[in-house]
Image (cartoon, rainbow, N blue to C red; front, side, top):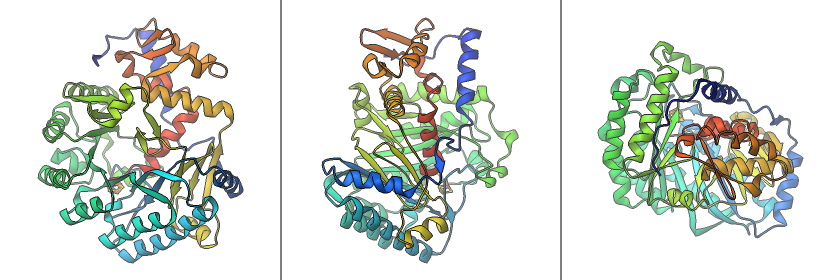
Length: 454
Ligand code: SF4
């Protein structure tokens, strides 16, 4: 299927989609997630999980430390140059892992471990080894457990990458964002193209199975021509996956973002052109467009899973190896267990105080009822696999199904015998087509604010 840019939309349709999109944008913080969500509710969910040893787990570990603050950053992180603070963090993290393991036992197969932050590779080699061993001692990690880590290329070295590979990490992501020197200065993150290439080839030679780059569009001083040059350079090395996120300015949560000159930001039309151009360039170069904002080489397991309509998504991102539950570890980490979305205290002191007192450090959460779970599953399937099967929608999603089918006439959705399928043109409006499902998108925003790192 081609990813042709859709023809001009009718003014009426453009307005409908625009209104949907606007409803999506300002959803953070997650209104449906209750502060004061009782740790007892999480405790009960962990107790239920202990009774289901066949259920599989994913583990998400948040490492909230960086060497400096990038001006566009919306992550939950702390700048420090004191390595003993990270040692102390690992001490508490170990205690938190024990609290969880004591409640669920060590029987559950862990299918995925993901380290993000912050900058996980800001840890020293000894700290990375310790963190991995802490996980291995308390949870059932197997040889085929998928281990992934998000890295800042400026902190990477051959020795560090070799160590990570030896520790079992097979998927590695690097924050590239943009390679134009002026854009890099405007966002307070200077890293040369040579550095990115060196780090990429080191990782390739060491033997990581999958290497991912993160790009951001909508940054100050970005234009189609500058972003095209960045894409040229990325395509030259051909990482397995490329995520292309839109810059989401959030000065309320990140006052450092005031340092970005708003007059240098591309307007909405330019942002749209930047993203559409990225779609055209990557899909013309052997990449499949995955979900909202990711590209994967057609041989990559994400692309294969999407083609076979078995791709999944959790707060860590897209995955071909889904687990029944996701446990978040560390300050601000998000998890989902037995239909309960939970988030740990985002501030280090609040998180540490609870863990050291032997309590689960839950800050807020939301227990999805049956209808919300079905809606979330259906919307996740729609985003990942670009279809809404009739049987997934029957019952409590009838209204959503009807609304989605209204786009058949506009060419954004196609009616199939067993459900609705998003067309290549509709893929450009996937976010808008889904955004009525706010419960899902609160989750999606959570990833950006609390899990995205480099
Ligand atoms: S963008 Fe990444 S490296 Fe930069 S401050 Fe945020 S988490 Fe740290």
